[in-house]
Image (cartoon, rainbow, N blue to C red; front, side, top):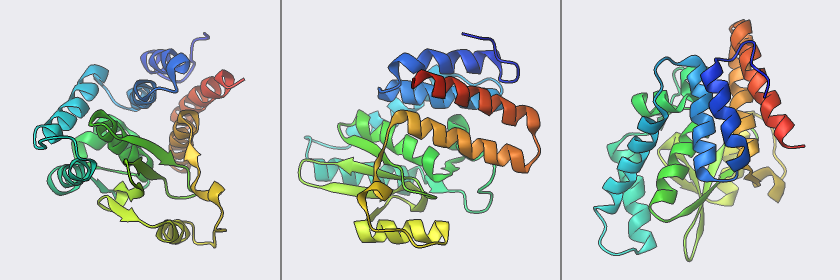
Length: 228
């Protein structure tokens, strides 16, 4: 593993350590936390994990039994009505919206970071959740015993039909989107992280933060190299 020239070494190292386990939820979570360690001081990965687990434990403590509908209702009530997880519509193009520890602190972020919070907490109470790699607006897909639901954590966990999901994507991209499955395809964890890095590269390029842009490019190269 080469030493980074621009990325903070601790962030680069933690990110690199997740490559062999990237297909796991823990690998995805820790890699996302590693990204934040470049931009934030004093990030505690174990603390982030503990907070997410505590959120899941609080939800589980409120449900007797394991009926999926009740669990899902409590999940959404806790995350969006009590914790007030929301999209940051006022400062969308801000790096903090992509940094998981900051998202948990402010309870706001961009779609892809909010979907990650949703995925981690939901899976710890028994659901399977995948990212929906829609252009312009990342979504989450949660599976229950009977249903498959598309969820938009950016808009308070609204549940969308497939038609509504396409319309939401068109709203954000400003262009027509073909009604084909690939536009609502599941995101691999590598795609999830790559998209987080691309978002940050866009922010840093716009703000002319060249060193930070280069740091995200180093993590992107590390991720790309792992795929070959």
